Image 1 (spheres, helix red, strand yellow):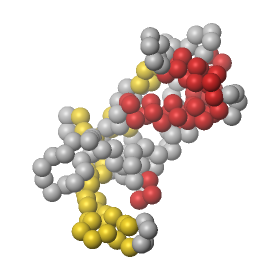
Image 2 (cartoon, one colour; image 1 turned 135 degrees about the vertical axis):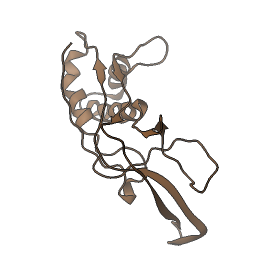
Image 3 (cartoon, one colour; image 1 turned 90 degrees about the horizontal axis):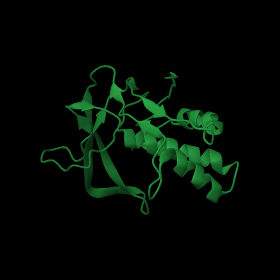
Length: 167
């Protein structure tokens, strides 16, 4: 993570903070589902430039899993910080987009995790049908340049690295 980031826990806790960050064992982390969603969307964009949508969706479902009994061939692990990260509190003001002024009584605050290195594993089982999309999958990972919300406020900008290990 090149900047602070905020991935909401979705839990409304009592206290003076309006929006809490997601935590596991009181540590910030990036959920596997967040990364999987970003990679899947990027992969969809890449395949959309090469083939029609219907064929692309079949390939995406065969790799990432789909409706019915269509298990995934790719498994994501939560990204954990390499060292404990501080959590700061940021403030903002809601803007009325039509009037282009701040809304009355619209001050809010939220937690943000500090920048740093987060790592985890992604396991992909390639078969004869999916091995041809290995480069596209790698590109989909490398295209992840932001995670979480608040990108217009400078949050969540990141850089992705792949360290390949063949088992």
